[in-house]
Structure formats: C-alpha cells, structure tokens
Length: 195
Image (cartoon, rainbow, N blue to C red; front, side, top):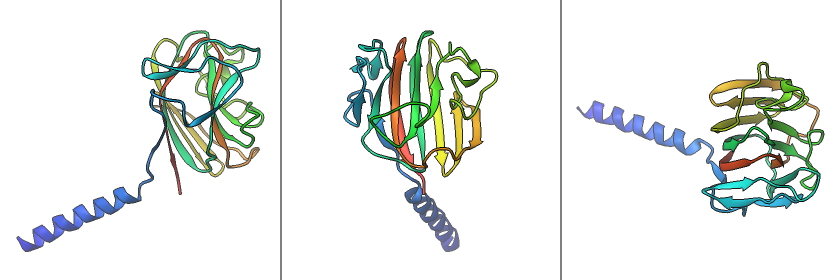
C-alpha cells in the first residue's frame, strides 16, 4: 500500500512539473478590448458582441491591429468569423510594425475570393499554397499557427493546410490582424512562446 501511494504521488508530481513547464498562453483578443494592439491604417475596428470587429475602411489600403510585442517562436490559436467578401489574415513575424504586408511579414490568409485561390484561406501567401482551398465564410473558424525557427504549420478547423520551411524573412517580429474588405470578427486570439 505504501508503494502504491508513493507511485501515485510520483505520477502526480511528474504531471505537475510537466504542466508547469508548458508555455502559458497570453490572451491577445478576449472580445472585450483592443489594448494589446496598435492601430495601423483606418479601419473601423471596435469591440462588438464579444469580438473585435471591422467592416469598413476609411482609406484604400488595408488596416491592421498590430501587437506591441515581438515574438520569435510561438503558437497562435485564433477563432474568427468572416463573410464571403472578407479579405483578412493573420500576419506574423513582421519586422516593422508600421509597415505590414505579405512581403515584409508572413501572411496566413483569410480570403475565400482571392483571385489566385492557391494562396487563399489556409495558405501562407507566396510561401505555402493550399489546394483545394477551404472556405471560411459564414461560420466561426479556428486557426492554429506555429512558427518555430524556419518551420511553419497552419491548421484550419483541424485540417493541416501548411507544413513548410522558409527563410526569406527574419525569425522574429510583431503579429498583425488585417482588415481589407467584407466583415471580419476575432473573438479569441491566444499566443504562447515556445522555447
């Protein structure tokens, strides 16, 4: 009996140590505020119905919410809703938080009507195609994005759409949420840094 109690205690201790070593999630979007971001461009970002929402540009160029913190190796979990006209995305490893685009960042796309659908929803623009492209419009979706050194994976609603290595950009930078057109809602965005 003493041996059983000692074994159970050891298992509980190991589980506690393993859990303590797991990286903790940081909440970027909780559907209540936009305090973790700086605005770039002029979309009508706002908190509405438990999500961060944008549905209008005041200029011609896309607009962004950009994190105040840079990240190197990380995982992102995001829950988003888009309509059929949405042009949006999650930009990662942006070296200049004032200049966000697919040439200076990696863009994990949300764009069901992209003229070249191979880089539409589920793809990393100009890095990793997705064929056939999954559709996001009209429902809540999940993105799980991992960037570790030069390796990237994207999981869209449980389906792996990207598993690629790329070295064209620096391996650290800010994260940006894009608004280009249509309606986009982010109700949850979490990030955790990987050692």
